[in-house]
Length: 396
Image (cartoon, rainbow, N blue to C red; front, side, top):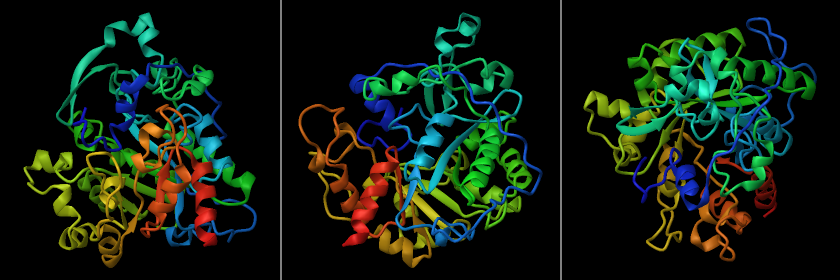
């Protein structure tokens, strides 16, 4: 995993697990909704509820609440239970992370290593699949989606990634399957019809360079599904996000006109496609005015790690905000930073309460501080808290 001093979006849950985690099991998948006809899926009923129903990301409430992997503060991540909870409890947009199966289907997992998020380790029939792989320069030992067909993956059940922090979520272990992205698109169409508005999604391509080298390129598969379900245009109620600029550029070249968000880790890091291409630029270079102007050539926003908005000191306390919000807005980019969570172990030291790392701290105070910087949205594991915090913020 990445260095402990910069626990960015990819690694912070793993770091939390080290504070007291284990693994849990999720299960019984929801039946997929009836297939939508290609190019359809517009919600029936009145539009214009201030939830981006017009199709433009500019119409979404500000700050936009993005359900991080659904509502993974309350349900195991990337399950229909998590997505449905987020949709019912304040999220304006629901996030999916995409990785492929051996036979080329896109499924929703935060990582291709499914050791911590499914019950695969307890399945003797798959014991021989355990292996060590190097993904984006880091060695991981476990079970990987690209070694399973979709049919095999569907026999597994999802579980809580960090049970030491979120023991209550283990109640739902074994309840849901790993969803395919196509099942999520059908679900979003069904929910849109029920609610009278289209459902916004925030879709990340995970490790795209790694998968392309395996012959499992993500972008073409994603583009095909977006077109099939009427989400390929700028009014498709879908954000596309990636840590790799070339993935967003490739989607653009494929004619996918959805708003795109470049995710940014800590200052010294380099996108993995930059590493492969021997491009020396780091995140620090990309957040300069010149770098942001370059990003604006293929994306409509950035998704920075929260510490790029307000750094923390050696005691984990917040310091002075950077100029990133101002500079990004000057380049015409929106900001969707990641990730706010309610537990003390994830909050800046300023907002921790008591000594239990898994107890809730002053999340409302933290949200207020971040909202005050002018960000356009935020990823949160606790969308209900984020939504209430936004309401409080907008009152004043």
